[in-house]
Length: 166
Image (cartoon, rainbow, N blue to C red; front, top):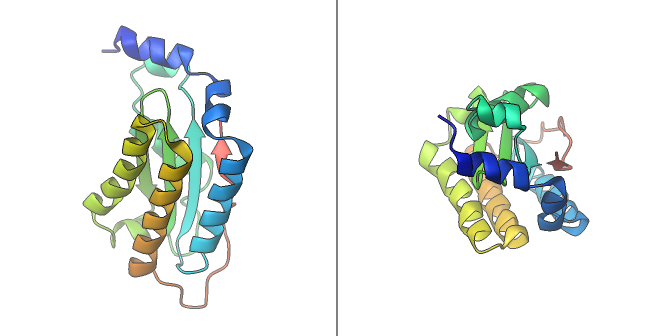
């Protein structure tokens, strides 16, 4: 059942809010952190920020996890040679971060490791520290991916590094 507070949060969390929390300088820094990380590991990272779900999605009970899986498919994060795509999805209205990993990389990284990356962001977001918390989480994610999926010289960039702000 959808709560009124969730409906209200999604109706009032605007694209403008998303742009204020993730200005161009932050988006550029994220892009650079993803590109730098992908030089050290074989995984492909996509980051998507969505201020709020549509009212229809909220009324339908769509969770941030379900939305992340939907975007994982829509943006082709699953379509990498080694099944090593990783989507970092940030839903501002729900104050949630979800990581969806393709089966290749998903088998090698423990769930608690993904959750630790998500916590780094959500704890920072609670302090309204969006830039630094995302950068810290990406450093943590890149180190994790380097440990479990190190570069072997065969990698090529298969997904855009530029974050998406919906």
